[in-house]
Amino acid sequence: MDVSYFITEKYIKQQTELQDDVDITKVKRSVRIVQQTFCQEILGTDLYLDLEASMKTGVTNQDYRTLMENYIMPYTLEMSMYKALPFLNYSFTNKSIVKKDADNTTPTELPELKYLQQQYRDSADFLGQRTVKYLIQSYNNGKFPLYGTNVDSSDIQPNKEPPYLYGGIYLADADDDCDYGIYPGRWKQVNP
Image (cartoon, rainbow, N blue to C red; front, side, top):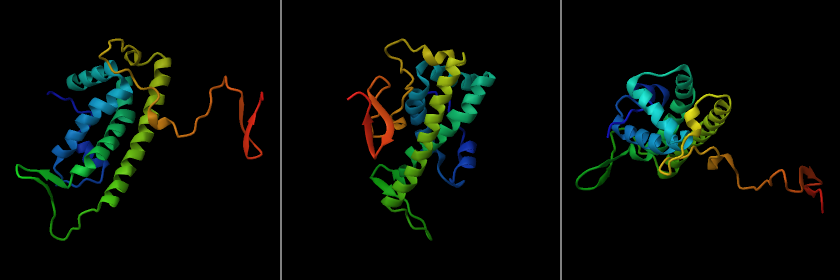
């Protein structure tokens, strides 16, 4: 499969804590998966494929460069590190899955790994939310027309409302009859 990566090995190592001796193939797998799933979900199939094609040919415009450099690349990096982190310490061999260890090092425990992973996920969620807002605003201003053209049933529609934009509290629509101001510590109903 011919994949045009949105981020390079150099970009990954310059922008993260990865040391030069890390096997980058473990991270590249995560980059590919993040691009094909998370990025495509944010961009929609049409814009995703067009960005990927422009990466392959090197022909791009200023809007695409801004989108890539300021939004997609940082998001791809953070989400890729989130996905790759659990696999950096393991190797899959023909006999078993083995955990690597070296002299003068202590392997990370699962709670620490989950904490580090959550740091990347939090950053990725913020950057994803920021990217969606930028794309919607740009699309409404006439940029990125492919953002709204996914009509084929096999296409992924851009997810303009990612799940991480919402918390667990339901705040009713504007048509509902609640005043959203706090009134003596409780919701005040306007039309009882």
